[in-house]
Amino acid sequence: MRNRQRGTNLGLLLLASQVFQLGIDNIPPVTLATLGLNVYLFLFPFKPLLETCLSVREAYWYRDWSRLLLSPFHHVDDMHLYFNMASLLWKGIRLEKKLGGPWFAYLLSVFSLLTGFVYLLLETGLTHMTEDSSYSLQCAVGFSGVLFGLKVVNNHYHPGGATNIMGLPIANRYACWVELVLIHIMNPGTSFVGHLSGILVGLLYTTGPLKRLMEICAGFVTSNGHYGGQQTYYNSSGGHTQARSSHGPYVPSNPSPEEIRWRRIQRFDS
View 1 (cartoon, rainbow, N blue to C red):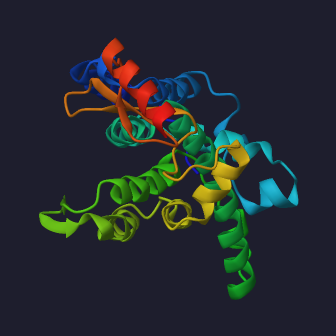
View 2: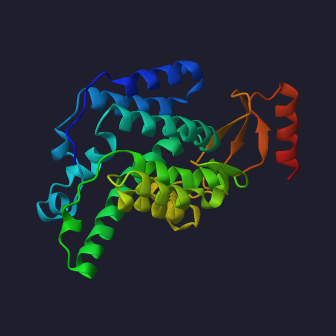
View 3: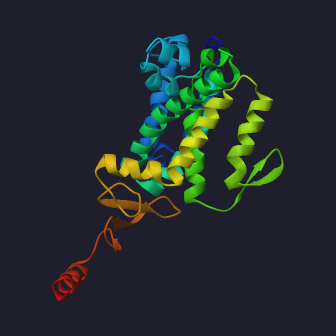
């Protein structure tokens, strides 16, 4: 674990530039709030990094479970923050528009906690299998584990296509695995297990069990996996075009009086 490097805060300048290039109005509220929380805790950390990073020793042995909440939202330095938040902007804009703000906020909350739990389980397993206690001492911090999970979810909802990685086109469905290995090779200081934990959580969601459990816990068991009630969907230009009921077909978000009358007739006829 490194001490935080303040320096010139180039990462903050780059992040601000990217936000203004996108336009704040084009960033959905949950994504923007999550970015703001990460930036705020970088500038005004809740605790020093060594007291927020997550490890088996600190969280499980010493029962400091608050690290599960704190570790995803603290970063080592400004460039660590920049790369994570730039990734959040790209994934968050797409997923929040696809899932709706309430469900995306719920997804972020669950992924933030569950990625930490999976990380602790994997590090504990490695400690027992290798009889090497250093795995229990490795302390991870940052939002990248959650981002790997979001990448899996994003590829699930937007299938097909390819990602250019070091000049090679890689199918999106495999890109997260390639990035997992390459990031660790190119920057050994990153947490391989932390990133892997995010991928596993993402797979738990996209294969069904986690999503169904989230629906049950939220009290909205729907057929489409979205937050119960009405969902707003967006066109490619960013504006909302229509709403979808959890239990019905697509309907215009602002129906005319004639459409309302016609629906009532259909309802009584049925």
